[in-house]
Each structure stands twice: as C-alpha cells, then as structure tokens.
Image 1 (tube, rainbow, N blue to C red):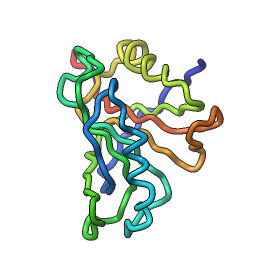
Image 2: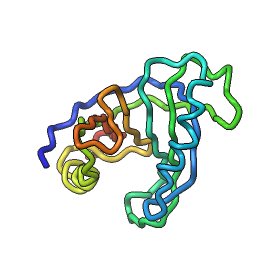
Image 3: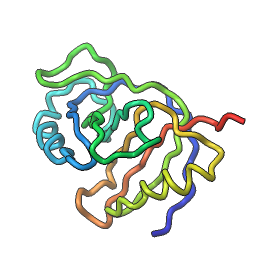
Image 4: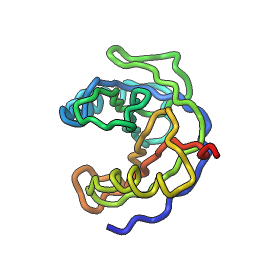
Length: 161
C-alpha cells in the first residue's frame, strides 16, 4: 500500500446535519447507520455540496489504551448552511475548526488507519487532538469498490516540546 504524505489543513467550523449511533470497533454499526440515513437525506434543507461526512467522536484517551470494545459515536452527515430546519429523527452537529492531517485514500484497505496512528503520527511532530475524526465521501467515493477515493481527516496539534 502506497500512502502519500498528508496535507496539513486548518479547517473552519462547519454546520452538519445527520444521524448517529453509539458503537465500537468490535460491534461495527456503520452499515446500519448509513442505511437509516440515506433514504432521508433529501429531507435536509440548505445542504452545501454533495459530500457525505462519516464522522467519529472518540472519548478522551480513546487511543492511549486502544480497546476494540470501547464505545464511541459514529455519525452520517451532510454539511448545511444553518441548523434552523432539522428533519425528524436527525440531529445538528457543530464541527469545531482546527488543524487536521488530510490523507487521500484510494481503495477499501483499512490498514491506512493503522499506518496513520502507529507510523505517521508518532514520526510527524504532531499529536492527536481531541476533536472529531472524519472521512469526506465525495464524488469519487464508490462504496465497496477498489476504485473508491475519500479523504481521511485526523485532528492534530503540534507536539508540545
């Protein structure tokens, strides 16, 4: 697997809207989440673009002692101009701004996450920041295809000396 160096980006805060579930890596409910979100996506007013956001909110210290049965929030979202109209069974999510390492990923190999957290991050001069992690599923995203492309956004801050 060839992995290009990430872009380091400062993200402005975003307003998102969608659904979430509580899950763990061992009990992956991603498919159920997206199956419940996608049929109702067109009900969301004031969408910005066509990108989908697959977002994770991990509890503080989640990666210090990784445990595949530890729970976190997983979200299926779209970006919106405002949170004034929220369809039934959906929720608003405010993504805080901040610095991110953005990896362009092609294919379905999830080993990229192992590389990011165990190889790239320790050697990078950055620390993992306690903000949401997310993937942007844009026009080149093709679920289940080796030709699929997405962006992986990892929250970072400069390592303290």
